[in-house]
Length: 191
Image (cartoon, rainbow, N blue to C red; front, side, top):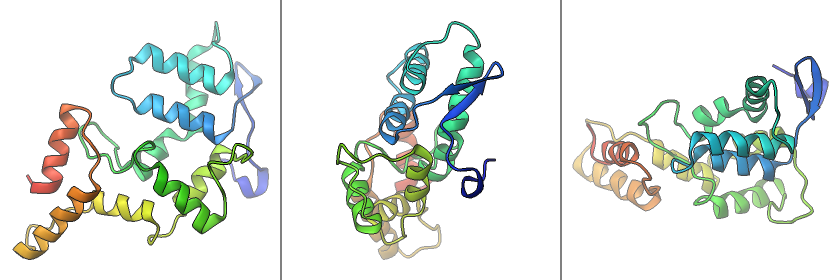
């Protein structure tokens, strides 16, 4: 792992032993995250979109290495487990870049004084992720994630179960697949 406090934020990756520029802007990386997370988009379109957004071209060789470096740069493993809480298929999504965008814009302004909607805002993807992950528990974004991810305790009183179910319904994300429908039902009604 790179220590950004010592080494700074990267702007290249190494592919085939050669440094290659990578687009570090948070908007491009968000586009890739949206694309990769879209259950309707096919795998080939995801790969091409990811490569084009991050490198500005579609490589003819070392494609797997370009993809590996892109995934590492994007920290998709971090997104899968700490932001979206989706480490495996069939678990509940707790965050959506489109649906939660207003919360995120407001929280970045309130907590960091960064206007994500300003076209002049330049923000390295890793800085964006650090600020996102560092949002306080009181932020609207983290509150929504927390409510969506809380499990209703089996021993909870009926009043507590109703309260938690109402909160989960208020903040729930629309299901996009059969697996997400099933995960949402389990989260609200239990196994």
